[in-house]
Image 1 (cartoon, rainbow, N blue to C red):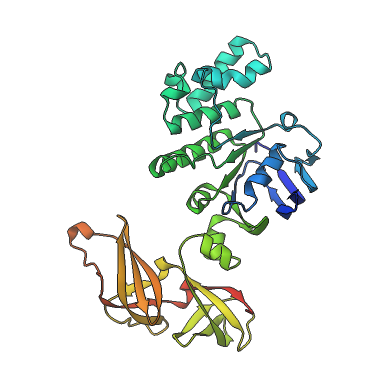
Image 2 (image 1 turned 30 degrees about the horizontal axis):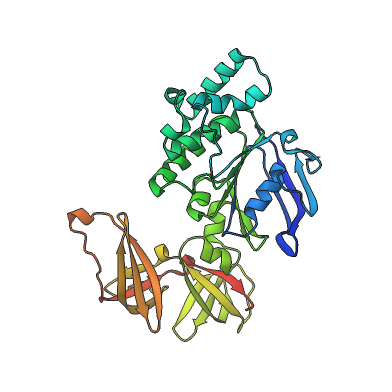
Length: 365
């Protein structure tokens, strides 16, 4: 496996009286595509800059393959950074932009030519080598920046929100490109983003951050299906959140009284006590929406009125008023062109789900 292992050990960072990073510890495996995910100001970019050497920790240590790199300058760490702003030289051609790191090292020209052509081929820009950055699209400029970073053959590539300046369709395309490049190069990627779809679609593991702390670390599926707390549940994807006391808990299933709205059954491995208040998550895609009541006996079922329908191509999202609150459901389109019967605005509907479709996010509230 190529790349370096990155270990962050009890790292904190203060800017005056403000603590941007609070006692963070985590390990990034060799060759892993690892994402730091969170809202603006959560500390993810500061953490990335400390790995790069652009900022020094106020406390703690950062290790690359077991060596503490905090005393080392950025150019001694064998890492490279790709920035959101591309940071290309406008007066240089694509070829010269990518060649620049090797020219600084006084590498012979024949070697430079071979290496530049190899990395331009990797990012699919070999035909654009004589163009200036101004002649390229945003996605092409970002690929030049990636090639320039990779030509140094770093053991860790740091990517600081590299796709945020691109439009949605181009972002999706570049995500695939990044994933392919990572598979081909095999080094460690550390990717900073505030976009949860980006993080969960390409990462081996994700660290969700807020207010300088890592709230959850795990595989994308773990973070989406089993969020550690309400912040993670709300930040990753859409949700319906319910609260109420436990009525009973036995046999891996709890019964929860949701504020008098319904009695909900939830599959759980938690040790819960009667009367303990819990918070339950149900994702919209797990909620069935039908005109008729469900026939299954082991489901939670609610009746409401559709107040909004949002059609988004592959699916429709429904906002349903149940009592005094709005719940969300989504339905994938299978054969809408062939006359698939669609639920519409102001219809009376039933929302229902099985116990295994819900998850207790927090207990002991």
